[in-house]
Structure formats: structure tokens, C-alpha cells
Image 1 (cartoon, rainbow, N blue to C red):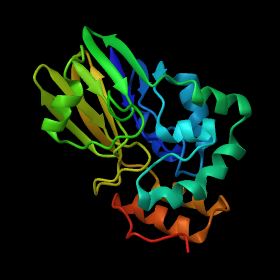
Image 2 (image 1 turned 90 degrees about the vertical axis):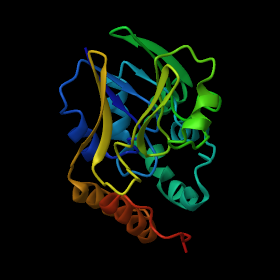
Image 3 (image 1 turned 180 degrees about the horizontal axis):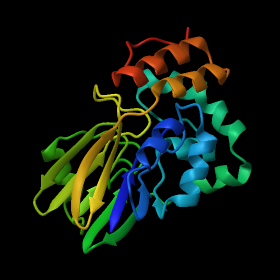
Image 4 (image 1 turned 135 degrees about the vertical axis):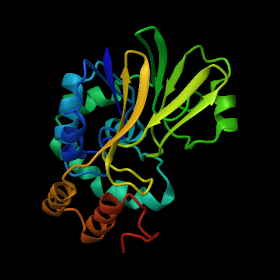
Length: 237
């Protein structure tokens, strides 16, 4: 079985289309289908129709509940600037479904026991934890799974803690590790591979420019999409 593992699509339809060209039997999603990107309606509808299981991300929760996503301070104003797109492109029922995604899920694929969560097992929505093995060892202590699949940081990595492997497929729609190519993972008959694929970044930038959001938000998001690198800290002003 070929399991396509996606996370942090963030309303980037061009990146999603490029990733799902990977031959697969099953799709799972680790959250943040919306937020930051120009086409949250398109990405949400695709995931709602095609993903076998999707766990809730902090931006999904924010849209569904009408609360802040509690992202990193440098990105708060960008999340606020793009939030109206989610409310305008999704129906009330679609928004409700985002809020009904579970916080965690367990699945077994080809004998591999997988725990799916957006951030960490102890804090499913909000904690940022990169490839720090010692920190993850505490997080997965007592977790009965072969693979813990996480997202949230937009950093692609794998760490091993005893018998448990923690895998972050990276971000489909907004990588932040210096590589702008869309990131994902593939679990193929028990073998897991971290993968990247180029996509039409300019198509996403053009969609941002048509979206009606502020020029400052377009400028910073375009830089991030083109470089995979965070723009310098600044405010909407």
C-alpha cells in the first residue's frame, strides 16, 4: 500500500496538485489545510473528498472556532490578513467539518502502527518542536506506535526515539527550511521516504495578488513561497 502523507497545505492549490500526482492508494493529512494561502476553499474540498483521515491543525481550528491560530508572533498578522479568505471561500458546513477533524488519530498501514497528530502528542495543536531527539523522546514516551506522524513546524525531518520514529513530512504549501519545493512523505509497503517536488510557485503568487489581501502580506508570503525562507520580521504596517 502506498500512503501519501500530507501536512500544512495552507491553501496552496498548485502545491497540492503537484504532490498528489505521486501514485498512491491512500491519503492522510496532518492538518492546516487552510491559512496563509490564497485558495483554502479548493484545498479544503480536496482533502474533505480524498483524505482517509485528517487531524485538526491550529489554523483549521482557528477558522472553525473563530479564534486566533496561536502561530508564531512574526506570522500572526499574516494569519489575520488571510483569514477572511477561508470565511469567504468555504461554506458554513465545510467550515464546520474542519472543526470536526480529530486532534489525534491512529491507523495501521502494512503492519506499521501510526499515530497522527498536527503538533505533538501532548499538545496536538500548538507546540512547535523541531528535530530535537531528546525533546521528542519525552513526547513519545508511552506512545504505542511505530511511527508518530507530525506537522506544524513546516520542517521536514525524521528522528528515532527507541523503537518509535517521529516523522514530519514538511509543508506542502509553505516550506520554511530553505527549500521552496512542496514537501511530503510516502509510506510504501512499510518503507517511509521524505520527498520534495517543484510546483508552479508563480501561480500561487498570482492567486495571492488576485485575492484582495494587503500588498504587505502578498510581498512577505511571496518571498516565503519563492525561497522557503522566512521574511524579515515586520508588521502589517
